[in-house]
Length: 244
Ligand SMILES: [Zn+2]
Ligand SMILES: [Zn+2]
Image (cartoon, rainbow, N blue to C red; front, top):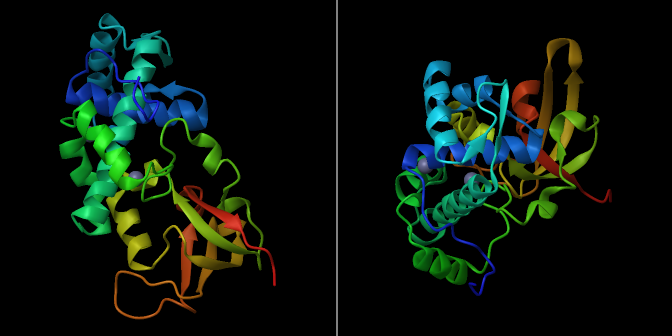
């Protein structure tokens, strides 16, 4: 047993299967089920490819229930999913904090490294990084889900509420255009925001940047108004600030 109380599966799946497992972990964690069609969309592959990979994954005991609309992770599959998710998130921190890679690049770059990380390096990263509970985008490392449980999707807030952005969901991380837009505008964990106009008939809401928030582009973000569609706003989580 490691000092960090993490478990490492005896053998690892292929890179492709690991990427499937990571996305499945997110679906199971946040939506309670793994839907093949959604998985195909998230991974940018066809439903036929997912069906084929499911076949192999069930043969190798990572998942069960293939052929139905949704599948489940086996115990072995879940352990492997947690392992790769943790490695992905630690790699993101390694890239950002130690290698000083730009924030827009770390999610994709991490995919190239996470699969090769040995249990020894994983332990070293946990030590050096001080046991982070969330990734740089605010998503929880497996076992730390409670940290994010009080953060609310922007779509559930009301006009005039003052909040701090805490989390950009993994499914938004996968959308490079959306992620770049958020980074450019400083909509990142730690940013202070005032909720502006909410227009349900238009499926949009506006937020106003407050405080010292800095975006990737030059200059202060304070006062900047940003309009988000509900589908994107649903993937951004915030914490209410005590009103002054
Ligand atoms: Zn990957
Ligand atoms: Zn992340």
